[in-house]
Image 1: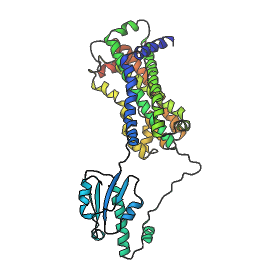
Image 2: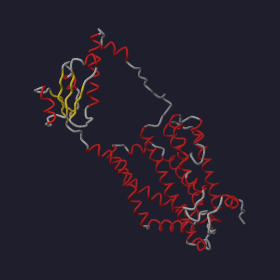
Image 3: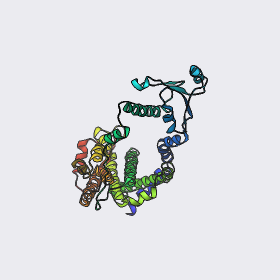
Image 4: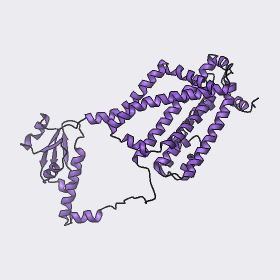
Amino acid sequence: MKEIWKVARWEFMRYVTNKQFIIGLLITPLIMVAFAGLPVLLERWNKPPEVTYYVVDDVGVLPLLEEGAPDNLHFLIPNDRDRIAEEVQEGNAAGYLLVDSTFLHTGNAYLYLSEHSTEGRGYIQAILTQFLQQWRMQEAALDWEALQYVSATAQVQVETMAHVKLPGGEEIAVSGVFVVLIYILVLSSGTMLMQSAVQEKRDRMAEVVLSSITPQTLMKGKIFGHFLLGVLQLAFWLALVIPAAIYFLDFPVWEALLKADLGMLAVFGLCGYLLYAALFVGIGATMEDIQSAGNSQGLVVMLPMLAFLFIGPVVSNPNGSVAVLASFLPFTSPVIMIMRTALTQVPLWQMAFSVGLLLLAVFAIAVMSAKIFRVGMLMYGKTASLGEIVKWLRYKEE
């Protein structure tokens, strides 16, 4: 364990003092906040403009337009109908609405604008539609209230039984954020693990290091060190993102964290990281460099994205056979099980079975990666083929 900690510390310090790592650590949350928070902030700053429309009203719709109009929307009767177009051009109004007597029969009204604008158009159309329907029903001797009563849609009130407890919006939000964090941790740390193994092969550092420690110790130290780097990244980003989320989204962060099953999230998140970390460091040992990786190595990097294939069935039917199967598969279970627990109550036996399969997969991948790592780190000059990797897996420990 002492040697593993030395390797982990060396890996941690090597990257945490790297300028590229520090720049990425600072720039990434800024990009995340910019894409997530800037639209919300702009929406707050973007106050709707004050808009005035003249109304040529031959049917009596103006009182209805004024009654429920937004604060920034104003309707005025022109002083002189003959000069209404000139007054709009002079900037006294944004346009004028023509509702003549033919509107009651044709349903056509005309909105003339001095410039392209969508402000208030939806409101005007909704009010004119309501006015036209009321007038035509009165003309046909139909009662408006009776028609509303007859044509009312059924409202289905969904209530769960007393013994059923479904996750609320807070749990769903926390689970969604945790899934994103898992992907960030796996992809960032996994990429750095692969690059670290490739760099040490290229610089012939592996020969020196492996002369004093075993390949398994080196591999475990690398995984542990990059896990600490990933935790440092996530902690730093969360320290910036959580206050931003509280300010921009007005979201009860602390209440949501208390309601979420953090223990379950941590188990699946940690197991998912260890699974992919062991896989990535083993594959990294087979590469001469990242660019010359073969198709098999490249496809391994895409494995974390496999869970996206099941998102649709899981959301539509979280207790369906596809969702249950995906929550058992080790390469998808860390994400899918977290999603299922956010959408429905998952039986305890399914969670236990999923964790058991995931732990077995982590152990199996770690053993196979150790065999690959032991041989691959000392091979130079080319990227290993799939046949060579299979041959390495058949080697027996002496």
